[in-house]
Each structure stands twice: as structure tokens, then as C-alpha cells.
Image 1: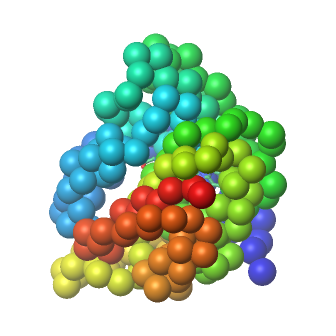
Image 2: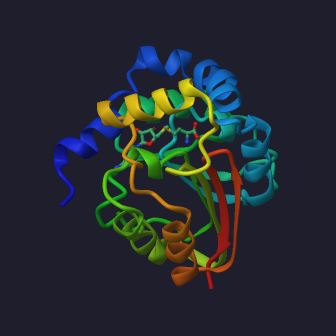
Length: 218
Ligand SMILES: C[S@@+](CC[C@H](N)C(=O)[O-])C[C@H]1O[C@@H](n2cnc3c(N)ncnc32)[C@H](O)[C@@H]1O
């Protein structure tokens, strides 16, 4: 049973002060040193999948939205997050695209938006409580918002593939204890099943414990 306090712990950490150092800490250091997942692989995932009508869920600082190679000069971008600080930070960062912002919890039915041709879930699933089959309800709430053939993609940190380096395990354990991560039961098998049950052309690449996934709506 998912508790409101667990949902809160997964997003409340993203204060304005933390957002100012997030890119350097997560995408500059931790991805490389701790998870052994190059940030370039995450950028390539965005470049391969973003389309002109894009929904981004769990936006953080908007790092990938800012760096992505968009297939249109003026992409229509909607930002969805439970934390208004993340929405403010990201919408200011990519103000050149005049994004729309929506405060919503991905574990509840979503407002009527879209249709979108691409949806990004960058580093979101490991922050939300429950097992992968429970978290996958987010894909079900998303379905009515997808255009036919929409790309659904993202990255999430699983409980396997962790480098045999003590600080990697220590950081994973610390984040789970604090509730920043809820991924102790997140397996590749469950993630594969959740995607294959709902989408076509599922592809998952593992880089350390990070699963980079992409799929297509029917
Ligand atoms: C680790 S950050 C990811 C930021 C960015 N996508 C990236 O890849 O760097 C997780 C984001 O998910 C948001 N978030 C956490 N739980 C959420 C929920 N239940 N519904 C919507 N957003 C949530 C947080 O506020 C935060 O912006």
C-alpha cells in the first residue's frame, strides 16, 4: 500500500537549493562515478526519442530538455511534476520554448492533456514508492494522453547491476533509507514485463544499475 508520506519523500528533496547543485552532482559526478552510467547515454536517449509535441514527467532541473536535439524549432513542451520548484526551475531554464506546466502526481489519474508524440520519464520511477508493477499504473494513466505511435522513454535505477564499489552500495542504501529512492524491489524482469504488456518495440539498455528504456505506443 503506497503511503502519502512515501510519495512526499520522493519529491520533497528537490528544494531550490538542491536544484542549483543537482546537475553537477547527479549528471556531472554520480552518474559516472557511482552508477557507471555516462550522462551522454541519457542525452542520446532524449535525442533519439523527443518529438515536437512532448510531455516530460518528473522534470527536476530540465537538464535533458535544455540539451536535447529537438526535431522542430519550436517544440510544444508540457512539464508535469508534483514539485512546483522543479516546474519553476525548468520552465525558466527552457523559457525559449514557452513550456506549459502541470502540477500532478503520476500515481493518480492525470488531467486531460495532449495528445503527445513523446513522453520522457527521466529518473522518475526509482523515486516513487511501490514495486514496478504498482508504479506501472503511471503508464496506464498516460495512455489516453498518447498519440498513435508515441515514443515513451526514460531511465530508472534498478536494484541490480550496481558496481562492486562500496560507495555505490552505500549511496543506494542511504537514498532508500531517506526515501529519496524507493527501488529496493525494482527488477529488470518487472520493468520489461510492465513495458511489454503496454507498448510495442520495447528496448532496454542497462548501464550499471540504470535501465534506459524506450518503447512505442500502438
Ligand atoms: C531525480 S528527479 C529527475 C529529474 C530529471 N528528469 C533528470 O533526469 O535529471 C525526479 C523528479 O520526479 C519528480 N517526482 C517525484 N515523485 C513524483 C510523483 N509522484 N509525480 C510526479 N513527479 C514526481 C520530482 O519532483 C523530480 O522532479
